[in-house]
Image 1 (cartoon, rainbow, N blue to C red):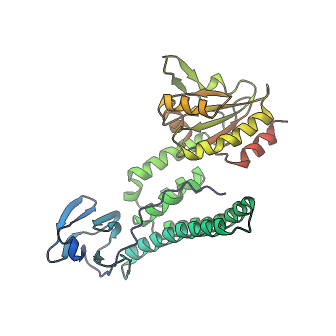
Image 2 (spheres, rainbow, N blue to C red):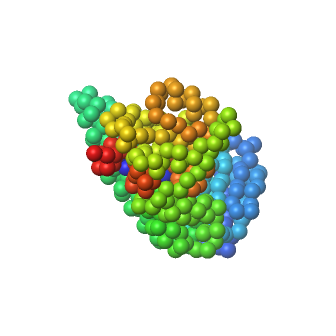
Image 3 (cartoon, rainbow, N blue to C red):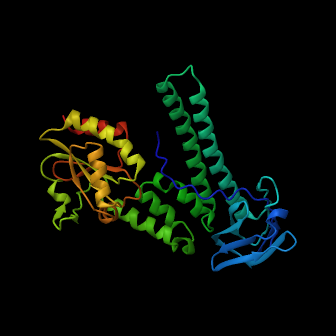
Length: 357
C-alpha cells in the first residue's frame, strides 16, 4: 500500500458560506437558540478574538490576507477559511453545517480541497467496511481488494493535491495541500515546488522545516556515503552510528519509536528479514528517536527484538537524514553507502535480497 503518512488538514468544509469581494473578510452567522450564550472564536493571522452572539447572530470584519488560513470555532466545532475578502456565513444553527461557496478563487479552492480530503477519507473507510462485511471473502482477498482500491484512490488524491499546489502558489491553499502530500515528493522535487511558492509562503515555519529536511535528505540520498552521529546513552556512555555502519557488512537501520503504531507493525517484517538473512554479511540496527528511553527499552523487550539498539537518539539522526516521519528504514552497504531509503513492508526483504546473496 502506498505511503499514507500525509497530514490531513482540519475539515473546514462544514460551513454554509457566501462570498463577495471586499478588502476585508466578514465572518458572520447564526447559532441555535440553545447556544445563544456561546462566544465565537475567530483566529486568523494577528487576529485572535471572541465574538459575542447577539439575538442568535454574530459578525466580525478582519483584514484580508490570502497567505493565512483562519479558523472559526463555534458550537459545532472549528472551521477553516482563507481570508480573501469574502463574506463568510457560518450557520451553526443548521442541523449539519455544510459549505456552500461562491467565493473568490482562494475561498473556493480551499473548500474544494477540504471536500476532496473528506471524500477520500470517507471513501476508503466505507470501502473497508464494505469488504469487512463481505463474508464470502477471505481476509487475504479483503486485504488485496482494499489495497487495490486505496492505492488508486490515494494516487488520484495526490494528483489533485499537486494540481492544487500548482494553481495556488500565491496563497495558503497550496500550504494546506502540501501538508497532505509533502512525503510524496523526492527531496529535489520538493525543493523545486517550494521555490515556486510566493516569498511569504516560503517564510512560513512549516515550509522552512520542509526545506531543512529536504536539504538534509538530499545530502543523505541513495548513493551517498552515510553521515555519522553520536548518541549519549542513559548510563553516560556514547554510541555512534559508525559503531555499526561501514564495518564491512550490510546494515538495515530502523528509525522508530515505542509510541509509533506503524513502527511496531513493521517489526514482524524486520524479524522475517533477520531470520532469513542474518549472518556475518548482514545485520539490523534499531535507532529509537523522539521517544522516552525506558519506553524504547520496554517495547524492544516486549517484542523480543534480537538485534542491536541505539536508545535515546531523539532528533539527532532525523535532523541529519531529513526524516519527517517514522518508521524510516535505510539499507547501508558494507562501506557505509546508502543503498535504499524509506523501505516499508515487503520492499524491505526485496531490497535486502537484491544485495545480500
